Length: 257
Image (cartoon, rainbow, N blue to C red; front, side, top):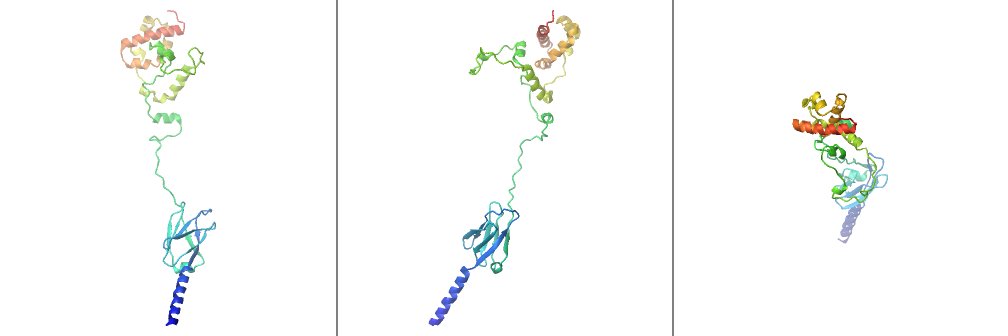
């Protein structure tokens, strides 16, 4: 009886020792040259290891154990251990890179080419209320003058008495106008001065020399506020505007009455 007991104890010990000594040895195979540390976890026994720089690893395992291979860069892969895996000298596991699919991002609702002239024509802008004229032209239109004294913001950088560096405001306005050249369709008008008053009337009533008539017409058409006046379709308003512009025109070009 005592002999049988010793035999059973020895057999059970051998079985336990054999189970504990089972090692799954293998190598991780990937498509990239650099092999990052892969987490190799025996989910059944709740133990884990990582591979070496060449991809080799070994972990305690028994047939039927579930081994998980995971990393941030690779897709998770699980493998059920078999006795053949434990007996093999060339057990390999292949992992695939994990590709994160990003949602499509729409930066703009307009399909742009990168060419400013073409893209400006595709993007709608609203310029009918933008003042494309300088202070001198506002004064000629009777709007009044502007200075820092009329502003609620105190100018702490440039005092009023300081001589400012002259700027070509008309040049700046011209550049801005060219930038929005393709968008002025919103404010263009088919009306012309001749639609309201004939050439003879302008020459006689406004005292514009006949040789300067077309120069005067060009001068008026260049004024930003002209389109607004003509769009009003008010002959009296147009006449008042032409009278004011004729005075400015004759003063600017030294035309005697």
